[in-house]
Image (cartoon, rainbow, N blue to C red; front, top):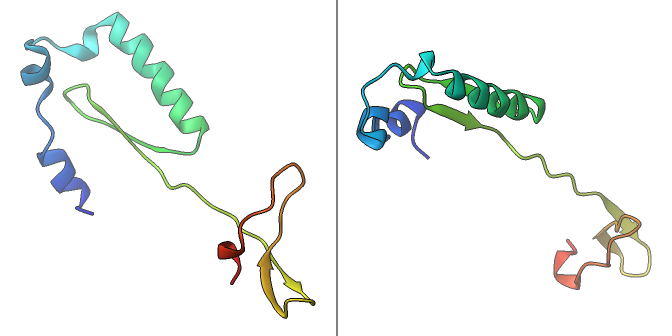
Length: 94
């Protein structure tokens, strides 16, 4: 995965995408919609980068939690199945 600088360098500018050269930050529709998007992303724990062009970059990491328990009969660690979830295949065992 490239650096943030590499990712940003690969993005087309807003004026090239939209065919406009106006100041998007002065657009009331942009301000309302971008504020809603930013607020939602922040509530979900994402990092936000708002560029001068008006582009918004959202980054985050998904945390996965897996619980293992000792199976006395099998003599090994196995995934613990949470209530309401179906049992996983034997391939998931360690």
